[in-house]
Amino acid sequence: MAKLAVLILLIAVATASAYSYRGDECEREVEQKMPMTSCMRWAESKMRSGPYRRRGGEEEEHLEECCSELRRVSSQCRCGAVKEMMMEMPQQVEMQRMMCSLPTMCRMSPCACPRFFD
Image 1 (tube, one colour):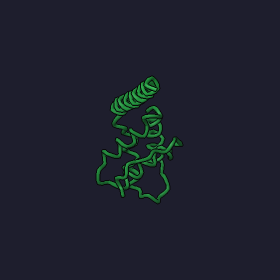
Image 2 (cartoon, one colour; image 1 turned 90 degrees about the vertical axis):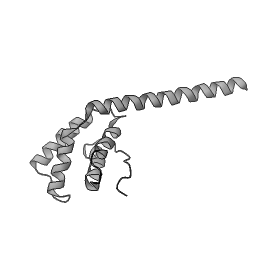
Image 3 (cartoon, helix red, strand yellow; image 1 turned 120 degrees about the horizontal axis):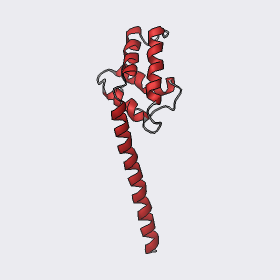
Image 4 (cartoon, helix red, strand yellow; image 1 turned 30 degrees about the vertical axis):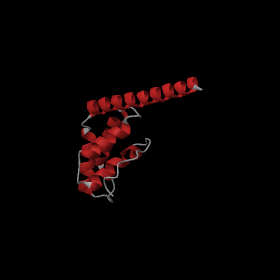
């Protein structure tokens, strides 16, 4: 029984260490990739044009460049990069919402974004 408890404890410690390592790795990766200037330009051009207007040439170009920047971030760290961009624009709820939708617009897995805008 004691051996089983020790084994369970070792597995729990190993799992926690793996998650901590992944978090540290993502933090470093996101720091290296920031700022994602194309994504910020896309959000700014989108705000200028309005949310219901069709995408124009400049906006489309920024979105394509932004998607390329986002693809350079490993998939397990991508949502962290999106959240980091969202945090760079406090008080700008619409831009935060647009940033949260970026992975989906780039045909990537969506992110569960912080609830800054509730």
